[in-house]
Length: 260
Image 1 (cartoon, rainbow, N blue to C red):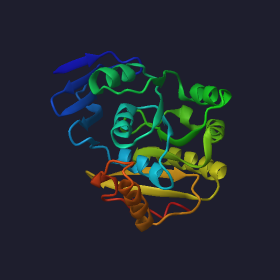
Image 2: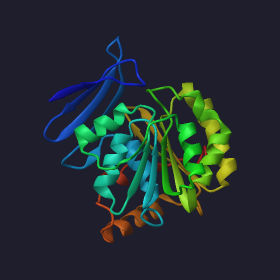
Image 3: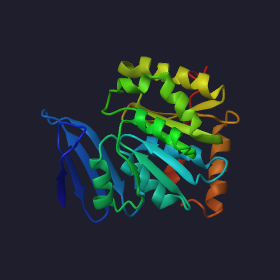
Image 4: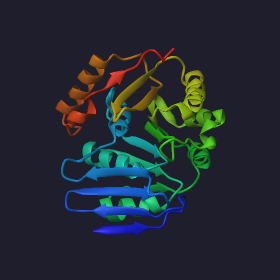
């Protein structure tokens, strides 16, 4: 079955194909170019998006996160993945486009009700003022294949963000396709976060179709090796608190050359 939704944020309709085993969400522009494409496998409980598993992976290193904040774009896939894989989670989801919440509820049966529809800068400020604290914060900072909105380049937003992260927990930020047009923006955000969260961060990546998916992780107690990541993840799986996903640690690379 194919359904169409009118986006509040995008100028193009959102196409959702919901069949027995998967949900496919697409936004196509007037030139028939896919600006957004993502899918979720309802049987395998997985997504094709490498950055989703790389971002979420870091929430499993120390303890199982109970309070999780997911911010902005296409987080229905993150939200569904966490609901399917992690026990005892409480998810808060911020998205500028409330249509994404509608899709999540109707098409994927996402259960979380902590849904905030507003600009992320205002949402972070409001959560801070309300005294909310999170164990894991997941941020996706791009709204199409190559563009990062300018509102993500304000240092004070990341300063406020630190105030809502519980001590010794982590921020995981996705830079998606690491392409030249956005590198200066990536570097600006990275230097903000290095300054705010001190020196312990790590850069995970995977490559697909000759494009790099990048995840930077901040607020760590040390710089973990890839072997340590794998061991920690498997420990959590054995405790039966996480549903095992082979793609979680598959084809993960730690890039050290840009960490300095």
